[in-house]
Length: 128
Image (cartoon, one colour):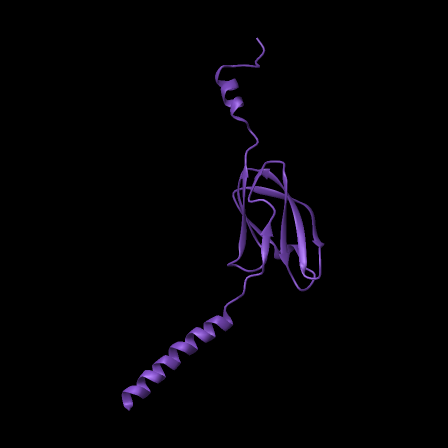
C-alpha cells in the first residue's frame, strides 16, 4: 500500500510540474513574413497579431542585414497589424514582435549579378 501511495504522489508531482510549466510558458504571437528571401532594395511585409495598438519599439530587429521602416504598423483587421520594411544591406534579419521564442527570419541577398564579377575580371567597361 505504501508503494502505491509513493507512486501516486510521484506521478502527481511530475504532472504538476508539467502543468505549471505549460501555464507559465509564454505563448507565441502568430507572426508572418511576406517573403523569407528578398534582394537589396525590395520591400517585404511583417504581419503580427496584437490586441491593443502596438508600439513600434516593441518590434525588435536583430541580425547582420539592415532594413528601413517604410510604413506601419497598419491595422488590417481586429487583431492583425502589418509593417512594411525595405532591405538596404545584405545579411540575415530576425524580427521579433515581443515573444522571445517566436521570431521571423528574412534573408537579404545582394543585388549584384554574376556578370559584374567577370566584367571586373576582364576589365570590361573601363575607359582607356
